[in-house]
Every structure is written in structure tokens, then in C-alpha cells.
Length: 549
Image (cartoon, rainbow, N blue to C red; front, side, top):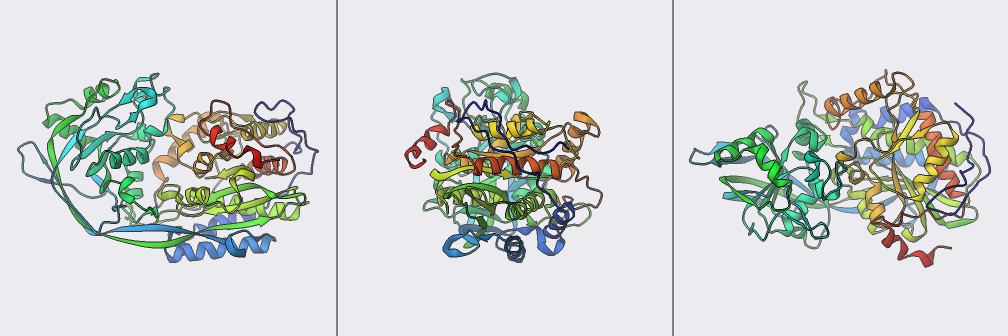
């Protein structure tokens, strides 16, 4: 690999010109990195779910590694952590769920196989729905700024919304939602939020692999275990009593019994004149829910800056995974989360060790391991709303999720599409190392809204989530894509996401070198990266402009 240069290119478009002096290339220990991944993904950590013994072990391990690296406690009250209050919710026993389609007898639905119902996040202790009508509401989008309203004033109180996943443009190309690139309206989280605003008794998202960007196994494993949410004053304002997914084939049956063709109705839902359609079906649901308020933890280590210690650069990653859940075909119930996201935390720790050994930066650097990403970016959402270090003087956030690929790559990327000076810095550093930035090739998956940089961005903080490249030195783009697709199909959010001694770690050193160089350049500069003028996050950032020198 070429010798690392930290001098920034002098043509950065979204921020003042910064040209830093060169510093020696850092040394990363791949064996130590691998050991961190293996430890965090070990069965003894039980999948690292919040509010479990696995969390306790994870917090203790990360804290010990940060302390050993020479970091200072970076949490609240002089400690290593930040309390994150959460609502924890579990379905008690097996839910009783059934559909009555047309005039037929009720048909029982199997949790995890035909339907995946989440534990209620409204604080209720039971869900009792008898004969709740099902209504197809297209993509379930209400976007006044785009002149779009799938609801047209329909009364959905006491009813179940049946919605398509992704945006109206996903199937048909260009339209009111910008084509294949998913907007937040396409995320299932938005659809649940809109269901609450509509006063619906429930929301069922129809699963299809392409628009969801993952298979049913991921849906089942992510939705049938313990659920978490931030503690809300009015949880019913954000959640309907029943939230879940149904298989496409079940939905097609509902449509057929209602005299409708599923594909034709999908086509109708892509038009602005779509109106909700009552289906000739009702749903019964009967299950108990155990809600309780718990405290989980973000972990923070800090290296104070020598010149501007009140200004901060953050590296982040989520420490949690899915814990113990439904067994796979082999009977394995532990969702180890080796790639997602033991690799990100291992990268965080290795960067921390390297920065601790290097000359101190001008700005402070914080290493932030957040909780409950898998439950809806909850740890980062809480941090963004309650920052330990002011958002106004946080120069940027570099997030790391799944920092391992199929081997060393010529390129690199970020999750989603965003225009900001921090990305310009990353691109410039990559170019100095002979690597090419490639925009996210799969923007239809909504990756921008699925990692912990998103809550930071909503708070106005310049933030990116790094993605390893797919143009591999061994096999090029074809092999890179094939490996990524195989991971999503066979291991993502499944017990099979485990450490393997045959992993190709040749991307780790180049990727960490790039991330180190970018963070160091920002931390040693007086630059304040900006969002582009057309970014939805720019206005929030500008609110605090006077607080930055």
C-alpha cells in the first residue's frame, strides 16, 4: 500500500481549504483486531442484546479495552458510560393470530413464518383485536411537500393498515420520490410512525425481498424477539398497538379474495390518485405483552485535544446485536453478530489504540460505542438528543458498521447519498492513497437511514457511515457483489453471522488507515465541514453557527 498522506486536496467544495502536513502511517494490529471480533462474537456474549448478561460483558470488555489503550473516561459524570433509558417489551408466550378471508373460516397465522408481529411499544400489557378490518393503503405515505397522500382522509381508527415496503418509485423508476434512491418514506419505521398518526390499530408491512433489501429470515429474526424503544412521554404518538410484517403470498391471498390483483394494486399505488382499498378480510390478535423500563448504556472513551479540547471529532459504532432468538435450521439460537457489528467495534478499539499512541490531536477525539442500533438506532438517537459533547462544536462523526469485506478493495463508499464536506475530506484522503470513492450503488435499500450516523445528521452534525469497497483486488466488482449478496442472504441478522478463521481481513488495514487519516486531518484542522446547500440537515447545523469559531 502507498505511504499514507494526510495532506488534504485543496479543492474541497463544501468546506474551507485545508491542507494538513503529512504524518507517518499508523500501525494496526490485525491479530488484535481479530481477537476483538472473536471475543465479542463468542457464544458467551449471547448475541450482545441490551438488558442482558451479554450487555454487561460487552460493556465491561469495551471499557477495559479503552482503559488499556490509554483513553480517558468519556461518559457522563466522569465515567465510561452514558445512561440510555429504554422501554423494553416482550410478547409473553406465543401470540394467537388469525385471518378471516372473505366468508372462509378463520385461518391461524404462524408467528415467524407467515407473520412477524412485534411486541407492542405503546406500553400496553395486552393486545386484543377482534375482527379488525384490513385496509390496503399503498405505500402508506403522506408527503405534502411532494403533493402525495395515500390516505385521502380515510378513517383508519380500529383498522389494520396493510402497506408496501419502500417508496412508490421503487418499482417504476423516476417519479415524485426521486427514483430508486429510497427516501425516509420508504423505511418501515416511517410506516409505523404514520400508522400511529393515522390512529390505526395496527400496521402490517408486506414483505418482498427486493424492495425490503433482505429476505424473510431477516424480518423474522429482527421482529420476533425483545423490542426496545426510547422512553417516550406519549408512546402511542409514535406506535400503533400492533406492528409487524406479513409474507407476500399471504397478502396476495387477501387481495385475490377481495377481487383484486396484487401486482395491479402495486401499480395503482405508484400513482398520486391512489385511494385506500378495504380488503375483504379481518384480523384477530390475542397476546400478552410485558413492558418495562430499563437502562442500557453507550460507552465513551476520550482523548482530549491539545489546542481545542472543547471541539470534538467522533468515531462511532454500535456494540449490540440481536441476542438469543428463534433457532435456525441447525437449532442455533445465538445471534452472534460477528460482522454486524463486532467488526465495527473492533475497528473503533483499534483506532482508539492507534490514536492514543500517536501525537495528540488539536481537537478532542471521542470513541462512542452505542447501544440498541438493531432496535431502531436508539443509542445514537438518545446521544443526539442528549449529547455528552455539544453538537454545535462536534466537527464530524465517522460511523463504522460491518468493517470487513471480501478483502482489500480499490474503492470505498458510504451508506446512502449525502453531500457534505466530511465526505469531501474522506474522498480526498482516499485519493491520496490511490483509492476511488464510489457512491452507494444500492441506494434503494435506504442504508442512509439504517446506521447510527443518521440521528447525528438529523441533529445537524456532519456524519457519514463508512462502507468497505466491493471492487476487490481478488475478483473485482463481480466477486465483491457476489460476496455481499451471499452475506445478506445467508448470514445477515441470522445465527450464521459468526467469526470464521478463513475471513479475509486484507481490507482492514487500508480501511482503518483511511478512517484514521480522515479523522486526524479533521481533528488537526480549523475546518468545520458543512452540509450542501440543498441538504435537509443544513438548516439545523446553521442554527448553531455562531458557536463555532
